[in-house]
Image (cartoon, rainbow, N blue to C red; front, side, top):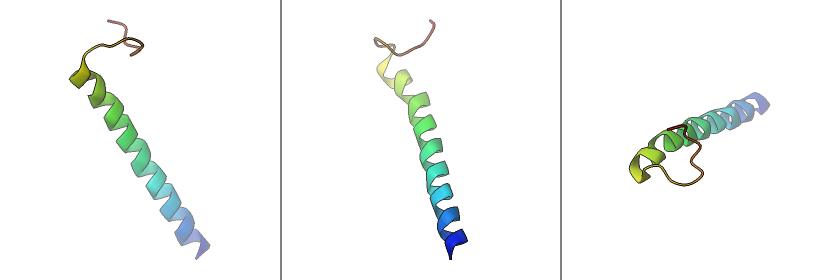
Length: 41
């Protein structure tokens, strides 16, 4: 039981992390280079 809950929490965390990385990757391209974006261009 405990292992199943732990695996579920890790899976949700991994999906959230990947989704956040994808959002960060796609967001600047749509909005252009804004202030404080951190790009070196």
